[in-house]
Image (cartoon, rainbow, N blue to C red; front, side, top):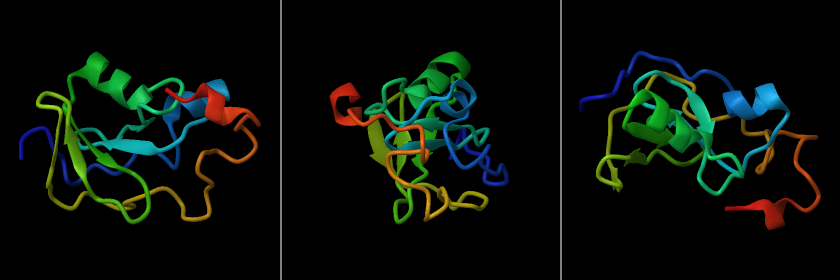
Length: 112
């Protein structure tokens, strides 16, 4: 599968941009090319999609426990893909939404 690097580990346990800015996310997505972990489109900042727009890396994978689906931004379709380098999801004890301590009380009203 093009645009996939099975050897590239994820960039961290959470959305890189949200963590840097003190923000929060709903779910996490991992770039299949470079391992960048960003937040989903339901999250306020949608860093996973912004990563695709800025880099052109078209394929991402869910970074949630129990999920292994891929998404292709070019075709806007889910697809199957190879097993990427571990870890395959954020820590199981990390809350959703997350990270712990950064999620506002009214988080549901801030969803996209």
